[in-house]
Image (cartoon, rainbow, N blue to C red):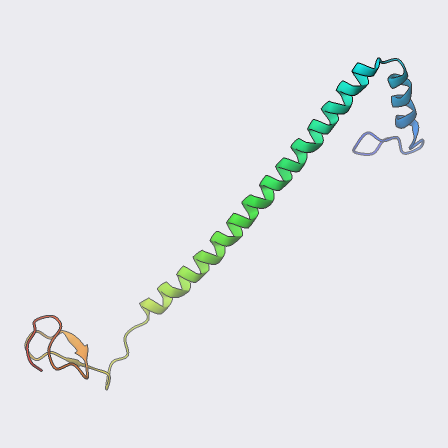
Length: 110
């Protein structure tokens, strides 16, 4: 019986023993080549994990920026308070601040 990695569940050290037997039949250059290949695989896996973390960080940052932009857009979309703070130009009908002396659209004196 084996687990998902191919480890023997009944004799957990059996794989290590089998690998030891295989290594005893190999030359030192073959063993070095296997060690380099495993090291390369480990580095590739670390690089992949690092890359995925960077992608997640970038996506998280983009999500925060999108939330900030959405909040700013929602604030910008809110209607301007009418009433005492704004008035209409009698010449062109544009909405101007209450304290304005001249219309910002047509330049007429208010």
